[in-house]
Length: 432
Image (cartoon, rainbow, N blue to C red; front, side, top):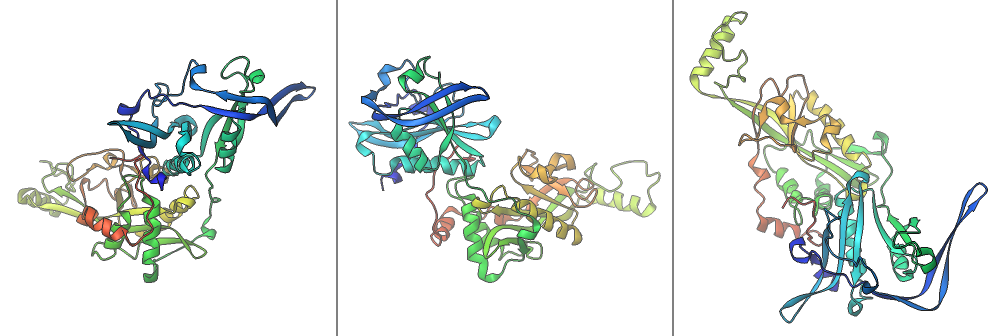
């Protein structure tokens, strides 16, 4: 398929490329707004021009270009043809997040005449829709013109609907010229918020392993990297001696697995002579400390041995894309953290989304005196205490099983062949 040729268009190469937005139309949407006694009457009706009208880039002082300066976070994809040692652009889509409103804007969409009616525009729009899901955007928005009836029809077919108009966007004669800016919006379909009564949360069954791995693949595909390997992690984690099936759970609605969380053992480690780590501190005055504790303190500091405390980590926590934003992840967290507390664990440390987990009580690990194994701290490194002092009273460095890194690319590629994996595609939200 020609859409298999959609590739990223790097900013450093394509910035300033003019998009030849040329089209001919025989119809337009007439926008009429009249003041009424109780407000305004607005009517939008489809009508015919007396003669066909053609619009082309040369008639505007502001032609469409890729990566214009006012779209600071723009990202583009397209189809390119090699011609005479040069690359010719045949189609493109550019998007830019509107962060304050959590919407994704389609700033450019164009397909060359010679490859139209081959599903290219649909394929490009599918990229924008995938980006919106990956970034959890509440809507996709774009602008077109009231005279671009073909574009409006295409957007409606793609699920867009009118959300407003601007009668003086391009000139003060836009209404007269039948070229009124039409704003359109697409709203990704979301399930309704769920309650605990709507979801069965239970242990995973052996017969569900492949189904859970498939849901995990869909949840993480293209989110952090090209493709993903979390489905392989789940497959291997279950066979590991660090895996804790007694705490891990799946969320089920009807007969569909809509989410899952997988717990495993992790550790905090600190040197015995760590001044902030030993129970009574690294002190010379043992006033108020029992004789046994003081003796143990002296012995541990002299020994140079290492304190190790077993804690928990989890990962992945995943929710099927069509169930994002419905509260499934929160329900899994609430139920399993309670189980972990009942089991006597002091805390949980994870690597995760810094814009999500703090809503559920997680804090960055510097609050607990904990660093990564190589002594670092950052927003995605978080923890939660299940009992007061369950993490902070120990501190130290965090270690998880090597299985989280034992995911070779070749092994992952082979394992992924057992699933109907989507296309690998580069997105701006990815880490590399």
